[in-house]
Image 1 (cartoon, rainbow, N blue to C red):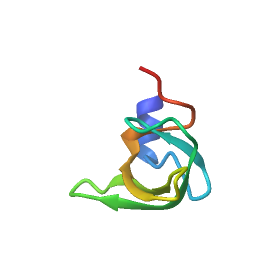
Image 2: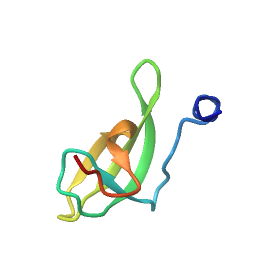
Image 3: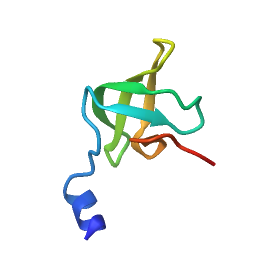
Image 4: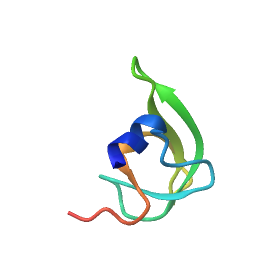
Length: 69
């Protein structure tokens, strides 16, 4: 069921959403834009972090809550 939903609409975030970036300090960041990237058009996002730096981040590195571990 979850895989079917992801296949029909793989975009999990939209501009304005607060996210956390795996591998970075776990401070809230904000999605500013979304776009497809690569041959598969995989979801990527422009994200502004707590230091006001903008990053291009693939969806699999983003979460709605802090990433631990």
